[in-house]
Amino acid sequence: QSPVKASKAPTGVEAVITDYAKPETIRPALKDVEKVFLVGPPARNLPALEGNFVKEVCAAGRTHVVKLSALGGRASLFPSGHRDSEENIEASGLPYTFLRPNGFMQNFVNYSEDTIRTQNAFYGCQGEGAVSLIDLRDVATAAVKVLAATGHEGKSYALTGPEALNNRQVAEKLSRVAGRKISYVDLPPADLKKGMLSAGVPEWFADALLDLQRLYREGGASLVTNDFERLSGRKPISFDQFARDYATAFQSEAKAAG
Image (cartoon, rainbow, N blue to C red):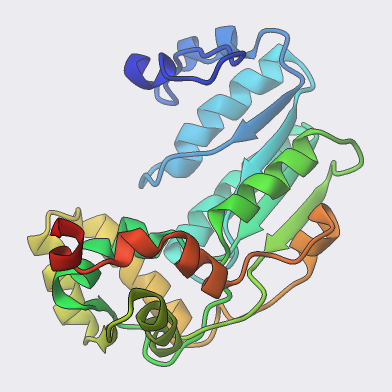
């Protein structure tokens, strides 16, 4: 969608501008394409947007669609939207592969970095619920393995990290790397929603995040699989390794300024 981002594509990568909401921009991007890695936006109308793309893929030919989905099926709003999209792809007759990762380790950078740096804390409402978080670098590795080989058509892979951790355990691991105490603060859902809305988060997105936290709180995201290891031939990245690799993101504001 962004010409600016397209201009920063690595050498040897041909970038094209498309918009999920404008189907007429999609078909030119599919010329001579045999495989597509479908990564939809975190949008309320995700199934409709990805549906536009799938229709154009059908018109272009039997392109193999590798969709970045989500673990959880119908158990929560976010994965349920992805499941709607999966069903559209299944009904299309196209060859497909679904990658279903659990929560991303990098979300602690994307969503919690500021409060970790300034307040030595991060917030949620998932109680003691443990999540088998996966590093995004492993998701990328899995995608490359599927895109670069045959034999994955019609298959789905549940991608998780090597262990399920609750946020108290995450805080302990971040504390060791940061060299100071970092705490997890568990809030009532209503208070967490109020904080998200005051930070400018759209209400539908806040509600979806709260529903995901409910799933975590109820233990619905603690599954650990070996699907990544079967695809890649190695163990997934541990949270300890992730924390070491991203240590600068969790420095205190004072240390970073110094």
